[in-house]
Image 1 (cartoon, rainbow, N blue to C red):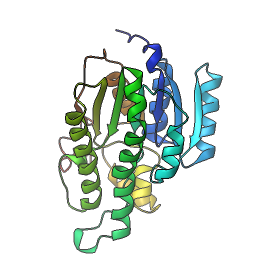
Image 2 (cartoon, helix red, strand yellow):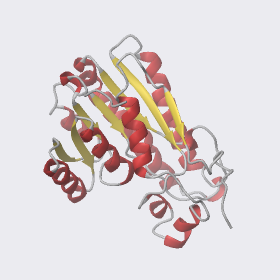
Image 3 (cartoon, rainbow, N blue to C red):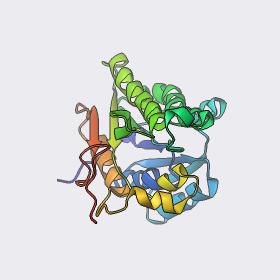
Length: 258
């Protein structure tokens, strides 16, 4: 059954990390669902090209270059809005796959600042605008890494646990206000950049992540899930949805064809 268009007061949707992958796919899906999407990311050329694509297709889209770890820039960004209907905290990412004994503290710091503090900055800055809409939704795109650990993943797992706890705690703290808090936790998603970035541009290492897996999730699979959750009736809150490909039973058990 098709979802109804969002109410007029809630039609602005801010998507962070919208320059590629899940963020870009989510922006496209929300635009198709009737939202006026605001695309944020550090790569100005990418989000401007996406905004042009969406506008050419008849959708309302605006690009706003933004580093979610820069609190002053985030606060300035928030002044542009009277109300916001949806905030999709998608900016994040992983760096490295080293054990705790040899992990790079700079990688850990970067992952925490982007995945956790970036989400905190945007959520704090836009929460009054989400409240003012009368029907706001905060989406935190975490990961199955935020729910179970695995060897070589401690830095990323710690950051995504932080994002999960942020969402869970916020939901408790604002209950009774007209804002939902949704957490989407994807498992193995094959995008053009995630694994490549994690392994410092090493294409061979990146490709091994998905080796033998017939159908990892795509960015559009996750975007479809996010959009479905956001477009439920206002009284329906999808607290947490874990989304994995059929081939993945857990973070450490994946079926791979020979």
